[in-house]
Each structure stands twice: as structure tokens, then as C-alpha cells.
Image 1 (tube, rainbow, N blue to C red):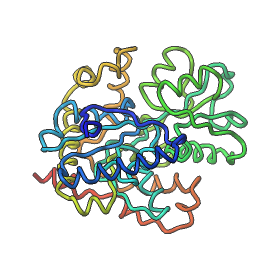
Image 2 (cartoon, one colour; image 1 turned 60 degrees about the horizontal axis):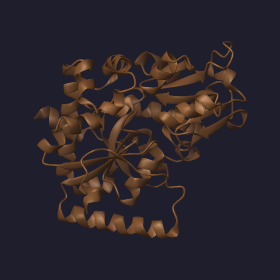
Image 3 (tube, rainbow, N blue to C red; image 1 turned 90 degrees about the horizontal axis):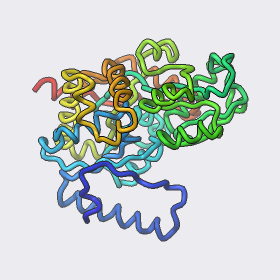
Length: 351
């Protein structure tokens, strides 16, 4: 049972190569996990769509500050580079929650699955489209990426949703470019350096490192509210904690504890400077360029929420973006009220 009790973040391997024997093992492990939770429901597993990504910093910070422990919870954070893989772990029952993009709650409802965001970390994607400096300087907009290979974390990931929408805005259908799933962080950098991709969408600290090293330049910036409104037409609630609705309704007291830990973390972030917060994070997150990590964090801090609430005008923006590349989201009736709730963060505020 020790594999389920590690308090630090770990990485789940790719699911693409799973053999029948390994599949059987995973089913068994999921059953064991479910049994363990039935015995001790305060032991929770949360999938994070990349623990080192700046946009998901509140997950690791909450753990490092001991806020889960203060709520009587033993939380294990597991890292997946793409949100589409993290949501799969949630649906199998391996994990009780996901720290990922809100747009997956809409995408899953279109597929007949019910999940709900209960804490929203930010109103911006925190992503940027970067282009290799090998490309000519005449490439100044997404339109000039026609015929190019564009990197995304995964097909069906939030970066692919955003890329489809941004290219469609320029009148470019999917056949006018190639999307290549390359993961995030080191695998993204390697793909750009090797020339496998010409451009791609990724987050900080990867964006800042590529720009600093002269390997890429920012083509379109979704790391600020101004840039996000200009490109997407409104705020775009992205990083959040979402849970299966069925689990949420069965365990409201645990959801309240999680919400309280995360809201407390968001408040901590707005009460401390980037240097203080960076010092709390794992050394491997910042060891390559610690000063660059702090600079990137300082720029990102104003975009994080202070209370974890979903903005009223956020979900419609996300649905509009998602409908560009998702026929189900476009053609089926989506009830946005079933994709999130402010109930739990409002309880925290009231207390």
C-alpha cells in the first residue's frame, strides 16, 4: 500500500503502451485504491496537469505549506503532462480530483460525463504561443503559421483547443497546419530545439526560459488578462480544481476541506512576494534559472484569484472557444451551471 501514501508529487507514465497484463494490474490497483478510500476517505489522490507549470503552482504550494494536513487530509499529488491524461485518471476512479483546465468540464459534459470545478485559480490560460527563432521575423501572427507544425501538450488537451480556435480566427482550418503532441517542459523544449515543431503553446517557466535562451519568441501571449481578452474576447478561467460530480455530492465535507486549503493558498500568494513563494517550492522547479523563475512568478501573481470564485463571464468564453474544435460542444446543449459551483469557496469566505 506504500505506493498510495507518498506525500510528494509523482509522475504517471504514458497510457499509450499499456499491455493487457498491465491493464489488469491497473484495474486491480484502482480497486485497491477505492477500498483504501472507503476505509480512510481522508486519503486523496489529485492529478495535476504538470506540477512544475506555473499555472498549477497552488497545488504544490498548498501541500508545501501544510494546508491539506491542517484540514486533516493526506493528499498525494501525481503529475501528468497533459490534462486529457489527468482527466482519464479521474474517470477511472484512480484519482479523486484534477488540477487542470476548466474547459475539460465542458468537454466531458459533451461526452456524457459530469465533473465540476469548485476552485478557480486564474482567469487567464497562462499560456503563450512561442515560435522558433529559426523562423523568419516576418512570422508575426498565427496566420503566418500556415503549413507549419505546432506543438501542443496532447491531442484533446487544452492547448489543442486553444490552438484550433486561434488558427480558426485567422481563417485557417485544421488541414492548413499540423498539430503535434509533444508534452510540456523538457519534452516541449526538446521538440522545438530539434525542429520537430516550428512553434507551439506552452506555459511558464518554459516560455521565459526559451525566450531568455534566444530559442523562441512570443507570438501570442495569454499570460495576462489584457492579452487574453484581446485574443479570446473575455476572461478565460483555466487552472482549477475539478471533481466528479457524483463524488462531490457524496463527499461535500471533503470538498469543503479541499476548497478551504486552496483558498487559503491563494490568499497566501497575494500576501507574499514572489521570492517568498519561490522559496517554498521544490528546488527542482527553479534550479536551472532561479532568478528567472522568480521573475516569471512575480509577473504571474496578479493573474491568480484571491477567492477561487468562477467569474460570471468566464464559462461562456470558454464554451465559445471550445466549440471551434469540438462538434459536441457546438451541437449539443451544454448546461454551464453544471460545470462549476462557487458554493464551496463561498462557504470559506463566509467563515
